[in-house]
Image (cartoon, rainbow, N blue to C red; front, side, top):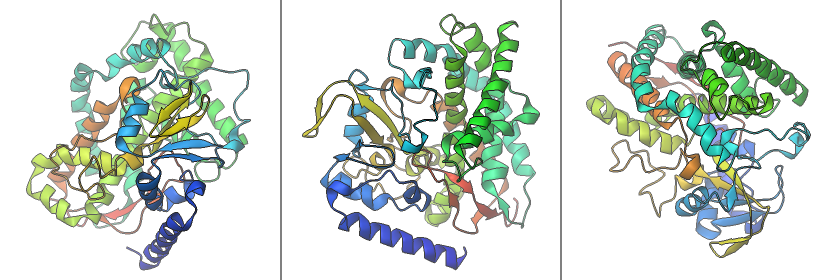
Length: 427
């Protein structure tokens, strides 16, 4: 890896650790995208778990909020939708974007709903992600994974994020939507625009973001119109257009669900595929274990999902005053569940900062959430990750990370923008 870049990041991380312990506890604010871009947020969460696991930040770029940082506390919030509602949003929204949404448009998607509306809308799309549907889809995913991997250059540097992680997940997402396959990278761009702050992703300004979202939703409106006037099929748009509980939804509500499905179908899998390359390069002993025993792929996938935590947080809004961990959360307060911190809670997970692909309980993690909002596509994510690594291990004895990857500038998506690697040889 390039020594200069590594040294700069080491300095930033050391400074962040020093600041995390020197800053007065009441002023700690983990919701800073620069910390996640530099992978420097760990010390703040470490201190909060130890000294203030239910912690209030009175002001930030996202307004005031509570941080929930320990595994069992996060589970308690995530499982209590009666007190901690999703209806007012599931992520921290920057103050600067407060005027972005139309104040007269209250449409939302099913993950940002409470029962009973949540339940009927989630149930409508669930068949596309059922065990039977995944069994049918698996051969196609494997065929595409093989084609992607066979197209990669040997002995020449390339961007793993672009050629592998984005490509496989976007192909799968296009299939779920029955989206025009040759235009599938539009889904990638729209997802990145929605999850990365303007100026740090594919759009430069809020105005450009508005235009990009108008393009996205206009495209999906046309697909809805096509599907609603055709016989029902098994794709997500057709399911929503013909579902008894969803066919009369407003276009704004359909667009909100489209945004959810684009992001949900993209980021978890894509960033864990990339994260697995980082983790195995940083832990060569674990890579050696994997080479020696391909039967560890399944547990390696689960361990990577924990270690990476591709979505760093979800938020809720308190519907009433509630005491948690000796602190009183007031009605209307924003409550942030830091999954990225809960997955490193040493009181629940042994050696949580270590990457161990043969853990006794590798699926003991919170990256998919809990309760009624547990990720509806979690099995599809695991399937894609398992297949891509089964195909990788058939072909390549090594994937070498050449330099520190560029991480996402986001407190929500914990991922990678690009990652230079080389495949020295092929089996």
